[in-house]
Image (tube, rainbow, N blue to C red):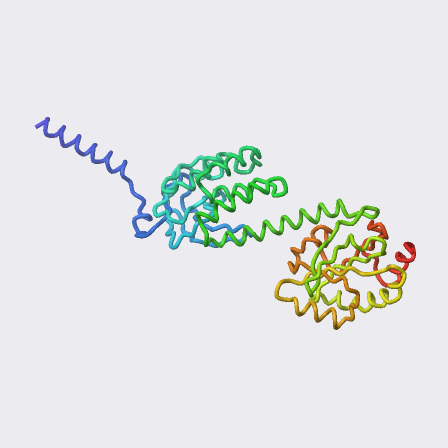
Length: 358
């Protein structure tokens, strides 16, 4: 009898231990599709958020729920897209790089582990690649060499792109930004991140070019050469105008202040054209606006022949080289091609500068 009692007691203890060891996440059981779930100590009754982060800093909410009293949580992933995500509980958060094919992501640990990348994550190879590389250095600038090596060697194009974007300076690491983008394009050719990434790269490159131009474009320095086609296809080089006083005028057919200023330029041109003065107009019109550009030249009586453009709008190579951030913008060159004045305002100021060079 005692033996049977002992056996029953042992079975009760064993069953109790088994039940403790197999405590399930009741929230996760309610979700039949793909999900992110887990248990985090200290998360009781806190809200759980998953947001997709776009390179433009836009946040797209994937879902929100509330952890139960045990710190158990579960969120349906729905149609998950490849990208960078912020997983947040209360005031603690971590970044997840997801491939978009994950079906059952699980996170375990303490809430305070999120901000230090010390939690355990299963169900996403991409997320663990990114997490392992960053480690606890979430708020630190990582060594450039490490980041470059990671971009060169990682199998995760998503992680490579976000490491480039968040850790490297584009002016010093252009080739690694290009490598990361090429890897990402090969793995995710239809991702909306590609357009955002390209836009940000172009904006950064333009800012860098403008900064460099501001360092280079100084009174007394030789003006950077420009060689672009006119509306009829003839290429005019700025350097071919050496021996003349030249006003470089950055403008566009769509720019109202430019159009308002054009009659004043025509008046100045007519007054000094026989004294070795001319105007070299660089248009910031864009492709598809050739007719509008040509029409504006005729309407405003801009009779000098030197009208050029690469039709790249604000990505215009000469505009970037000269650090042009707004139009109209002018640069007056002496007969040696050196910059004599930058943006002289008004007819009187421009004429005064021209007279100095005659």
